[in-house]
Length: 452
Image 1 (tube, helix red, strand yellow):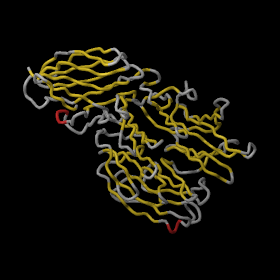
Image 2: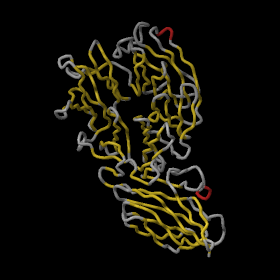
Image 3: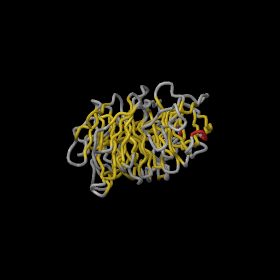
Image 4: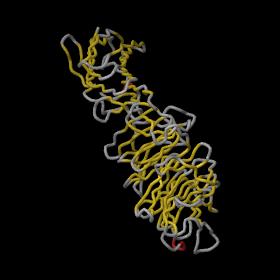
């Protein structure tokens, strides 16, 4: 809060805007003016406290439960243009697709864990390749019957120079690659077909492959390696680039335009192909072995653990790469997926919805909180919170806490500046704003503090 001394020994502290957000690194007593100790389910990017990110129902997936979803786009020679169908894997492991005329089951395809999908043109036709860490690959051209391929148990895969490169389940110490021009041929008995490259060093298991600036980057438990892989597999070459300070989590690795964001045990990093730079220091993450991330419209969406110690994702962080700003929401997201430019979330109970700034979870408003640090305003003396003013469009609760004792004040929305006089005294003061109404917009928080 910015300070303005008042007649009679008082001082008025004002938050001109809330863009300082929260900083979880420091003790609450040493936070900079205007920086909160906690901001959850609010968005602050325009200076006011507004509805943060939530999950809203999507008519496309309403009433559906699943493990993952994706979109398959192919060229239809009969129609003379591209057609798309949305696809998802249900909790029963079966795959369903919809060209716009209703969901239909894809016969003969069943997964025992959440699958991923990659599009590829195979034998002149666009096809979708579907894999999971516990199942062989399925291939479907969008028209005929799908077929099962004798592939490794793939945990991640990427297309690079007409080959598929993959990390696999099990010992996870090798990058596997398919035959040139045929991602369904993983035969490693002939130099003209598929094969693998082992990477055995202190960087640990291979977690994920990413195609980035003409190389295949291999993200591992404790580091990053780079694979140069052109047409002839005899010319493939692997180089180790980076050793991480903490464990890297597979699901948090995501290509974001000209950088790759990754989630580690010690925070978020941006990797440019050569070195990694720490980002978003203001948020402290707990171990997040099941992190999930996607990139859309300049933003890195990450489902991870901020409060839980059990490894179950409890929060969604949306980080704007160009602005360096972020929004934190308390949401039970198991997996993030992207259909074109839209971000979808699969919750822990299998519900599917679209991520948006709705401030709610499937229509139920989230409890939004902005909480200041604890301040003595530069004096050990007892002081009184004499007056609080603010603007709010919705009903809110303002909590004034002095020396650990709190009082709540209900404030109705609308009607211009709101003013109330708590007359609460103590050596230290904390202000908390909470809201559980849609369309929240709170601004111009100001507190008048007087010494006793």
